[in-house]
Length: 532
Image (tube, rainbow, N blue to C red):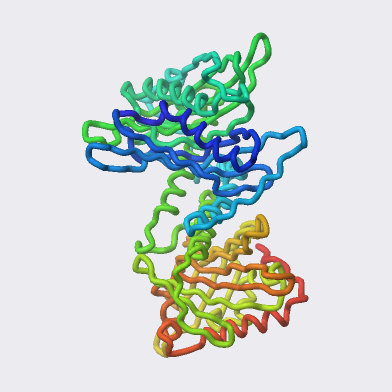
């Protein structure tokens, strides 16, 4: 069995470059490869298929989606090996900087990936800030650097190797294949991991490969690896690659963090020995490994929670803020890309649609207003103003204005029955402005839990899985507003009669929204303040 992907990094690099250069019309450079998660292994004698496609182009960079599958021709079984996203930058030509043309998505899947690419790009740009913020927040998030009597010294796992870049290792630009560098880096990381566990480790994940600079034919690549930290059944190995030629100083060209496991005879992760941080900056790497593991676990929990699972809310804290925000916006974008909505009712150009998928009922309300998209976004993004037009918002207070994109609110709604209690919701509101003309403004809402705001006896705690607005600019003064909601048990009582066609209260609510926007179209609003 082949664990990791040593033999196929080069193929991935070459194949992913082809659609990038076809789209750009010029040579392209690999800037980074996002987190790679190996879901299954590759067997000897199996057929490996690598599919690469440009998902979205920005001003001077583009994202290429990569899917690797494996097929057993004898049993007709096909399985997914890994999925990753690579970022390519168009190489400057004699005419100057290359302006990339936009990708036009045609299918629903292409539209979904196109929409999510902007969120993935945002996460790449602030990845380092997330680690820094988590490390500087407090030791309560990560814990102290503990000393164990039976811990093995990290220095024992240190590995250093030198590779000479030869013509077969380089592309048509005489630069070393990014996939070749990745393969060499995995080799030294595997040796470092083996020194800790005295067994053959299995590569499970790779944090982002970031190519800081090129290397060329004739360069010597110095590859260094060391185990940064060992957890119960996994370990993180830090790897860096430096290049030099002749007597010139070494230059840092790449770095990555790889997570390994050791499988027992039942193919279950085996318990690993503890590790003692290396002298010098060993404690820093030890703590950073804990931070990256926390982020991976938070992200895995947030993005893998099934919609039918209860509770729908997930805990919010500064360490998982970016991934909750990503999941919040992504869920709304996914609903926006669905094309099988059914028109349930319409009144005065306010349309109500429904969609039942995976045992979940979704609905959307669509209307047009004579106001700019930007002003519509500013008016609707402050949830405190929603009670001016929505009777379902009885109270709304800002709990925490996290940053310019994310705000936490507590919203109280009136009771549906005379005997029942009202509901309250703790909501994360995530705002996004368009990256270009093909994007809408977004206001995404989902429930979260906060230890400072537990449920109370006066209200029933409600939950929202996914809701929010997409705001499309159709002309300078005509805007299409679409409101989405996945109808959880807490939301259904408020809209059940509309869905059944027994009421048109949705029309009165969104008609009031239209009047609210028209009345305030020339008004400048301030964003929520944490001081409120």
